[in-house]
Image (cartoon, rainbow, N blue to C red; front, side, top):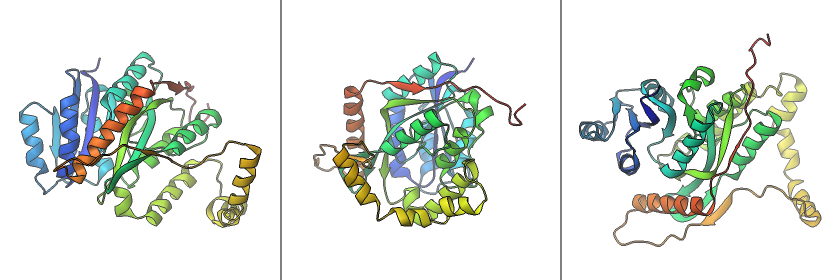
Length: 327
């Protein structure tokens, strides 16, 4: 029996203005049967003092502030400290819809065979809150896993994990930056039971301190490719696999063909992926509102509006565990 229904686990490092936005909302939303667990990586911007104040006021239930290896190390600490049946990852610079999260957690509680819950995520640039995009490709990746057993990547912001399932999924890899990419490639290559919520559980707020911007596009892609080559069992070590998956030659050849293919599919009225859907947020500037305040406000309003218009539907298929050696 778990002490709490949900453990919200938060990692942070020198992002106090963002953290105040995130924890301010989470503290206000937390219910009595939920806990907040925070791992600070040794910040020097006042974060430890802020967390101490929240802890002493009873607004967060556990925290640690010490030098760590990065986001994955911090999340691992939190997950090992957590006392809730369901673990919800919370990043220190993004927005979350707690009503949708609770509905997803409720589905997991009614369906104990579900190990991990995924869902929609939006993307909002701090510099331009007028538009928000939905990661439709992640939903398509989930369907590829569900229908074809492909090892795929998904965004970790909406992810909920059943604490008891950590024995199967494992903790996060502390040797990578793109923690969620490695974790989702890993769990989709195993017999983990995943479910998908049709609601927007989170919005990624792209900002100057975002890992993707700090890391850079090429470095990010190189790391993601290494993960895919390892977990995707269809990719071997033959010359044909090198040409098809690793050389970049196939992508180069396809590039001039894509516009012709799209035009042909349009004529034939064949549905095709159009890229991330970009939606207007209805952003209206408010007096004395900082860009950070505006971004979080717009993200909150968007999730509330979208989820009110799109009642939660869940997609999942229970998986049967098999032995690693095929016994």
